[in-house]
Length: 415
Image (tube, rainbow, N blue to C red; front, side):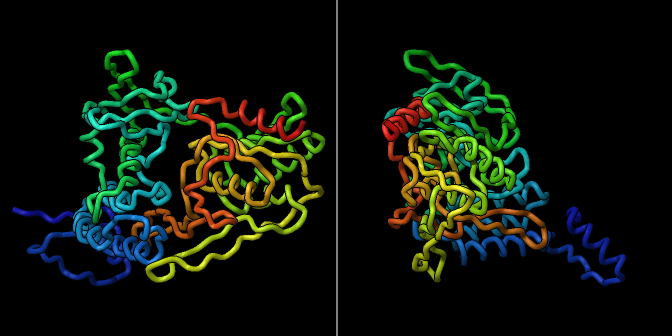
């Protein structure tokens, strides 16, 4: 015998309606019960992305098939977490690290590039992936993982099995970009949970490596010090805090007499242009273009418009500047070095960045309150080159000493 159970949201709506003296439609026991808000919010998310997501031309995603496959699963979801898991799968079909749920619960799959960057190997490695970069301060560092190690199993399953289970189901044709994205999703694990890898290092037998869940150490969003040879050094870890601007201005004032300046955005997850642009404005004395942008227009993209940078502050810093980057420089921390180079005021030193190529827009689903973000306006440098393809002027091998390379570069400019 089938029973009908109200979900938490349905029960809440029924209670509110009863208090308001409303009459609810009688339940029909011959039909599968579902939460109408699930259905309506799924349609809102799917339609918003269909109209506004900016990278469909670069994806192999069949967006109509996404609706056909996942809408019934969303309607049938019996818990909030199960519903959010379905929406996470929908966004995964776009294989875009900038397009994701904003408030996903523990236990759901993380996006890529959490603390490891991995790459495919040549045929014959049975699906193993090779570690290309490791984020400082991570559980992966603590566990002794090294660049060049092979990950052959994830949580007891062959790596390739995990990858295939996570692979988008709605690709019209295979896409190397999707594979690169998913192998990095696979090693990122699940939110709030430990990971277990089987790892093969050079000249060593396979070993099991435990990576406990580790919270990132909270460091100040901005720090500064004076290095040898009168070089100023400012670390910016976020462009999301208004206080960063005042702290940066104070540091720049302290370094006004230096021979050169290094700005380090290697572990900066991004933030707001309203913070980054005024910082860049301290290095110019007249308005300058620093980026081009586009947005969705029908099935394609609009013509570009130019973003202008205004000078700011009591003085303009005119000495040479180097900006340090790493793979964990993301979003606005990619736009900042691109802009500094575009206005002719910095040399970029480090590794390629995360490759997040657009300004993002938030969406809050009206009924469930679930929040997400999506790539909405692709960004290009002043030469109309995509931000996601940007590479440093002085490229440092993964695992190399980026700060030392930055100091060497700056010394050449200040001798």
